[in-house]
Length: 526
Image (tube, rainbow, N blue to C red; front, top):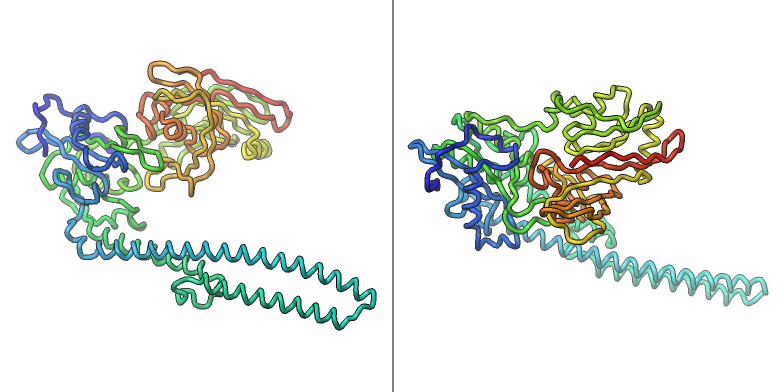
């Protein structure tokens, strides 16, 4: 424990849920700022990392703090002064170096296989071009011979020409077979039963299968070392906490579990937690240096609740459960086929799975209504709802064909560079921290947003967004990553506030029945 000097006079009354997010307790922020001042020399300007601090009280009443990081720091599982991992790092020496070496060898072999596939693809493309060129020549020769036969020319000579074409094609096929042999993999025995042409692809698939199996086996060996304890003195294996599923990669390695485990070992009472990202943002762009984040539910959702048993802790927030006080959505347009409402922030578009998340736009309108599209819980503004299946299908087709124009107004936390532009960043969900979305140019789905600055004031920028695709959290991620300025009040990609400053202000579409072009607007209240 690192004691506070001077000792604080006011302490947190109760430990907040690690999943709550928001601004950390004042003492936790003080400890985080002390840690941030120490974080030099770890290469964080190139590769940032999540850190955490835990304010604790010793049995003698003195108050201090612990510090931890997620995963490895500077290539090491354990760095002096930081809370150690949930396993004995010395136990890794029996299998981890060999496992990493085996994975490295498989990675190198995979590179060779990928190169072999590339060579084979190039050879096949060249061979196809040669065959097509020869086929064109032979077709022309057949046409000429056919004309000569009509003129009763010497058929024996023409037959000889035809046999010459066949021999020419046979020689080309033999040449291609030799070329195929040259592009076969270094380890053709791994592709028994496959043609030489298909061998490189089979080799690559085999390497990928062996690499996945080795990685999974190494992860299982690693997880077997983790024993998780709670403040009642009970103990469980990491794998048992995630049963019947396997723990996700990195489970148990986050800063928060390390901090609480250290507090247990040293008989310290946890008072306040803060986790923050420090250094360069990851390639996904979903973390920003100096921003505080709640514990991730994917890796820690099964670990922290068990670890904290025996302590008085606030319940994890259930966003959308406190919607009873939210006013009824305002009707902007309605006829016998559809209704367009102005959804208030904090109200779900459709009911959630949890019993406390049944309140929503649809539940308030009635069971007969059908949701055409959705707005995030935290987003306010225009939303269209159908009254029958035919109207619902017709409107969904318009959305799918991008025939519906939407305009959002957002207040961004930062001075955006430039006055207008287009953001093109592919997105996918983060399976380890749902419902967060991350940028992924390889596996993500295309996401395009046009933007235009409306005004700038007091370090904030008001922007009009026109999404050209409809991905989950698209505007929120594009603001935080694409413009480097998260939307004010964004609890996932920025800093929480009273509300998310994002409003669906305009909606233009063709009425499915009357075919009138409807242009609807909603005033922005921020």
